[in-house]
Length: 432
Image (cartoon, rainbow, N blue to C red; front, side):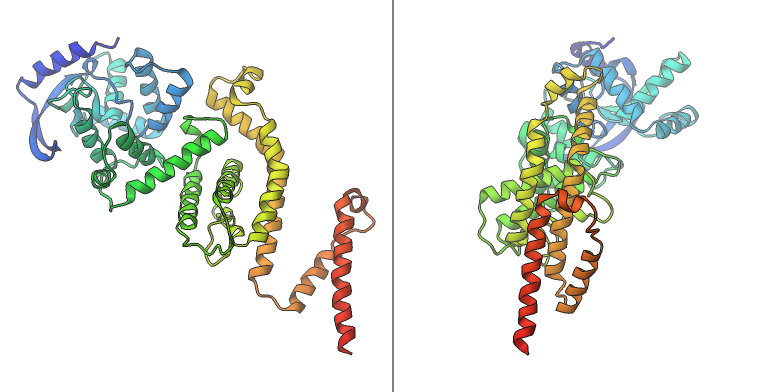
């Protein structure tokens, strides 16, 4: 059972006044000090729901469950489960190490028992306590402030441990974006100070906040606001696509791109939404990063730099993909029709898979067609090379196959090709 914050605070204050087990240096409230380390009973501690390892999962869980702000038993068990499941193999190895060597590095807790540093270790000590039926303790610095009473300073400290230049743990790919937003919007810390807390150059957090805004826009676009685990995948390729899209939009806004046609805000919004659809599709986020041909490749080697290629690409996308997206049920409607899914995120992923099944072929075909146009424009091929390629492509068409006549657009293309070859033929005749 979770002990109330007032009791935790009183007992930790008493413990703080007792003889320490040791000491450790800590930079807090703008200065370095030596703080005593105390041995704390585990029932006086609660997990930090903003812990970097699980922040995306916790924000998603809160959205799914409309969870109260208060720290409840349910929230405690959810965090405990997430910390364990995050890396079971590593946790099992650490359990063995804790049994053999006990806790080697002190953690940090607030005066009301919120664990600032050492959430995973505390979780594992709790498992040992249950397994061995023996009381276990968490060695930690007890800060002079309760979390709620001095959240700003404690979060500054938390940032240095989670994301600063001396951070010992590699956190998830979207943690830094979520944390930068929390620091800036929830805590009210300016971007220059955030850069310092994270040990980065000026402008770093501005970029994080811009990419986070795109991520939130994407979740709105797919009808999954604040379900942040929808941004994650096995190899973090979604993050790379958002980073590239942010760079593209900043270059275009700053007129530093090779785009030399007259565009407006609507064109840039359209670019963003089409890119969101390719992020959602996921098929182009491979090692080759072929999605960059839409707007990211330099030297005009992308669709958006060429107005005619872009217009055709965007128009075809609008004809085929947009109606499918619009026709799909929103997430709540989908869940109502498919109540067997255990969570909103599970339902959202299933809904995305259904969307992909319908749009996959059309999106790949449209991308391939635009890619061919871009290739021929940028390759600077001689007429003979182009003619040879055209002949090889035409030879692959089986003129006896019914599919030639089944598509009404084929007749129009044949007539256009006929006109083009006729004009070339006339040019040769005029030469004679």
